[in-house]
Length: 320
Image (cartoon, rainbow, N blue to C red; front, side, top):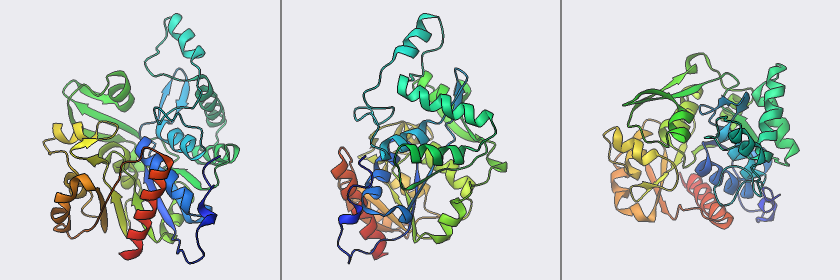
């Protein structure tokens, strides 16, 4: 397991802070892993988007939650960032041969996660308790929380009508033009047990480089009020996203995709904003939003990159 391999090796003079990280899928998982290399288990809580959860082939699937957990456990596919390493695809291949839906690719190891989660949910157990037990089984020592135990479903308003998120994202490959978003069930959803406490005890909130519209906004709508410094890391570098449709969404909503656009999206809650060196010319524009800035290398190809960016973010928080 790679997760906790380095955090105890730092000098005693290093000041660690209690951090709550808000994360979506691959980008969020990468920074969460970097933070977990530095912060002790009691210093980091990761709250994960569950708006993209859905039922498929009779299974309850939590794509962002699983991506974060697999990444923290050192089990994620290094090529894709999602799914399991050394995966096989016998089950879905056989589903497809029988005429079943195979557009959402579920690996054999991954299916075991969904089978056990679904079984336990049907017994009446909460998603947060199941996630806690899965983390324990996978050797994850830091706290990972779904944003809510209540189902919240991200619906995408498109030029072809409203689509459930996975239908838009995976089945339709983000091709329909986006007009807006709705989070079905968010009004009655509460944060899971432990989330409010973590937020109250936190020294700062880190918004990971996840999609602002469909990964972070659902979490923010459930948290509702944040009374701590908030630092966001831009998921857009040079007008493009490393992974996912965030830049396309900004563009189709009539907003030029940029790090500045991300900062403006969060401007009402932001204390600090981290943008890539590629976008350094936007730093003054971000500062004009009354937001402090850090310009650094935000691309996270390897674990060393993730840890370095996490250190940069933590030092930045210490300077605010």
